[in-house]
Image (cartoon, rainbow, N blue to C red):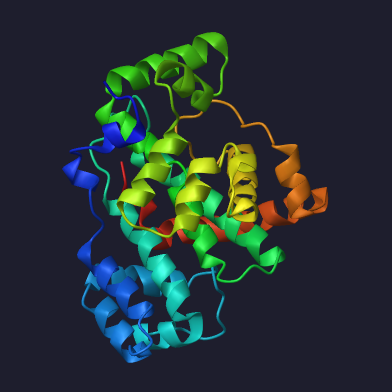
Length: 285
C-alpha cells in the first residue's frame, strides 16, 4: 500500500540521490573558507554541467553585454549561490528516464517546467527578491512528483487521468481522490529526501495550495502564479489537462497588478526558446 509519499519513494534507487557533484558544490558554496576558485574547480570537473551553465549564462536569460567564456568568469558575475541553483536545475533533467509516453513526453514535461521557472524568476525579479535563481529552480522542480507517479504507480496514474477526463477534474484533484495525496506532496517528500533547502520542499509541496505554506508563503505564491502562467501560455505539459485555478489570497499577497502578468508573459516569451536550447530540453523524448 502506498499510504504516503514516503512509501512511494521508498526503494526508488534511481532517484534516491542527486549527482555527487551537487553535494560537493553545496558544501563549498556554504563554506566560508572556500573561494570562488574552489567552486569553479568543482564545476569544471563535470564537463557537461560546465557546458550547460556557460550556455545559460550566455543566453538571453542574462543578456550580458560580452561573452562569458569561463566558469570562473561566470561564478564572478553571476554569484556562487545563483550558479549553484542553476547547476541543480540543469542536472535534474537527466535523472528521469523511461516515463511512458502515454502519460507525458520528457520534452513536453521539461518545457512546462522551464516555462514555470522563467515566469517565477521574472515575478521574483519584479518583487526584488534575493537570489532569483532559486525561483527558477523551484519552477523546474514543482511538478517533479508527477514523474515519480508516472514511473512507480502507473496503474494509479492511468486511473487518475481517466477520472480527470471523465469528471473534468484538475489532475491533482483526481490524484487526491484516487491515491490520497498529490504529486505536490510527493515532490515535497523528494526534496526532503534529497536534503534540499526547506524552502524548496515547502514551495514544491504547496504550489497548488499556497495558503498552506507556513514558512515561505511568498515563494509558494510566486510558483503558484508562475505555474498558471506556463499553463495559460501552453508551454509544454506535465500531464494536466486544464489551467489550475488562481488562489486569490496568494495573488493578493504578492501585490501584483494584471499588467504584471502581461509583462511577465512577454519576458518569458523572449527567453523561452533560448532557455530550452541552453538546457538541452529538445533532446529529451
